[in-house]
Length: 343
Ligand SMILES: NC(=O)c1ccc[n+]([C@@H]2O[C@H](COP(=O)([O-])OP(=O)(O)OC[C@H]3O[C@@H](n4cnc5c(N)ncnc54)[C@H](OP(=O)(O)O)[C@@H]3O)[C@@H](O)[C@H]2O)c1
Figure 1 (cartoon, rainbow, N blue to C red):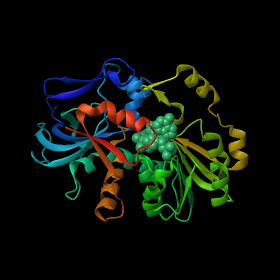
Figure 2 (cartoon, rainbow, N blue to C red):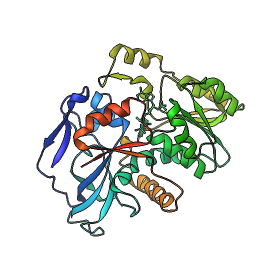
Figure 3 (cartoon, rainbow, N blue to C red):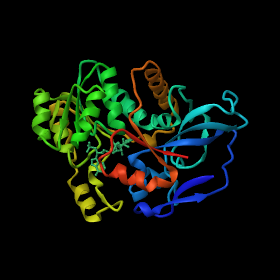
Figure 4 (tube, rainbow, N blue to C red):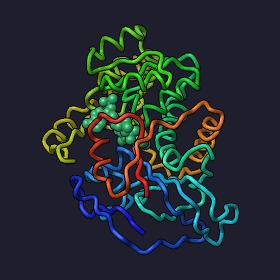
């Protein structure tokens, strides 16, 4: 099989494509012949050597990748409820950038027939992240007003759509003008293009009383304002830090990184209580042990998709051999929707 291996953290040149023997499924696993692989920003951070859970669970060398679609090649002895040859989607904690993958049965779902393999591979991570942020972390209620950053990206596309499904008013923020239409089409009630207008002023104009929930993976660039923009009982959901990670040739500047780390806001418990605000954080890669909860999320997502209420984000596909170009594009902050690799 082919797989992408990162032997040492670094720039795009660290993404080596290698031949390895096919893995053999354990009794509770299945072997998948992978057709498409979702690319996530976390894969870039893993390549940079800055993704804590990559170091915690695997170390280097590492094969990144959290999600695939493909055909079931072989079932382990204890897997009796899936047919070999079935079209499936799977979530995995690393190892996804490969043409063959073994995963636990509990992480495998039937691929909806109306989705291509590329679209199916684009679905799990971003939708589970958005579902967790809205339903498990913030517990959003119908009628609440949400501020969604990076709204035309992978996770952002899902946050906007799910916010609408859950009956909320969604104010979307994008960092470039070519993304405005995409955010509107996803159903956002208002779109702020922060490349041409003041984010602070526009956010205030769209919700003078403040936001019930702000969803922020920028980190340092917006986090302080995101907290200030909360209404009483508001929840700030922090789920990433991509604003710290502007790269040159795939490598963030070390001094800038250290400076941004020091400048990242810390929230005072006294302020939280007097203002009735909450700050919530999560990282799904540490939650694979809670697989029943994640499987319930995935069932909800597949139901919304089947009902025609949740669309897979726009997909741009690259051959596996062009993995470096896919990372470069995702780090450019210019992409809309989701990138996938085809095997
Ligand atoms: N906690 C979790 O469990 C979890 C799970 C999945 C993803 N995430 C996080 O969610 C975020 C979105 O992930 P994604 O894969 O869906 O990516 P994405 O949103 O498709 O792409 C990243 C977007 O972030 C914005 N951005 C701002 N500064 C950036 C920078 N320096 N480099 C690159 N992009 C920058 C850009 O949008 P704008 O300019 O329009 O804002 C860009 O399009 C990431 O921070 C990721 O780590 C967290």
